[in-house]
Image (cartoon, rainbow, N blue to C red; front, top):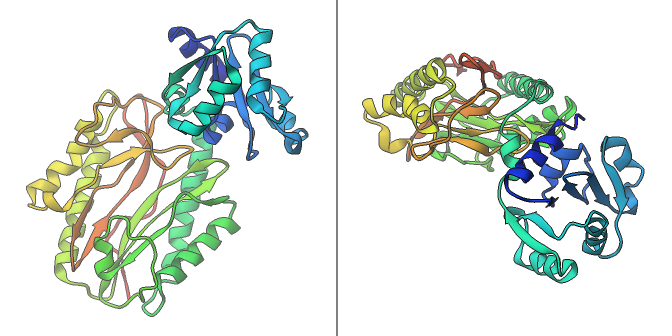
Length: 357
């Protein structure tokens, strides 16, 4: 693990006039240190990088957290933090307000007194937006596994199976091929349930002459993929084929024109304007995409309200959809990297209209 992430965080601390920050978020802790254990804190000062954890991880932590001083904290973690801050003469401490409950904040206040607590937001998350080459390699592997999983599921999908049976098969396939878990609760939405944007797998029995939407991803070595495809069984209502073609046109148009320097609002409009033009705007109620990385939803956002500027190194999804209540819906999604000149697409599953007998 390179220490360039800690270096960048220190630069942000100096910009904000902070001498130290305590990182409580497990994902941010792993991002900075490489430590995968379930308990611990990262304390970054302008001079030192500490990983505080308990007895259970005192063998594992030094092996993973290269460049960090690993400290076994006492029964009251904040007393150990206070001692470390005192050793450097630090009198104020930033903390992650988005990851700390009021109860935990009260404990901080009590045990760290008289150290001044300074609320921060997004210090590490803003670093995580930009993926380095090592991260992109892992994300490509996670995307490849999602593609393989979709190919696998097409070979077993048939009427008579329940959505949950398909979900279980997908989960097992991803685990057997290296995933730690799914990126999120897998969506297998068939028939009229395909009109539910977040229709996680249910006990519904998949039938003939309907659409099935799959939205899923693999969590692999700490990073998520996120893939959506919609397929047909038999001969669904012609209206469904109509909206499939529209969603595909909108998604391909967005992929062809997204580029660095564009805002999330502008990227969203690339897909939304096409769906609006066909008269289905009211049936596309979510954003066109979102950031992707160690979490399945990160910054930036590709939405009507987003002024985020797309920059090289960002990974986002592109996933327009149309959902017709009582009939069914379509969503098509790929994961992309913003590059210096345009994009690189990580996912590669076919988007041709697929009909299974």
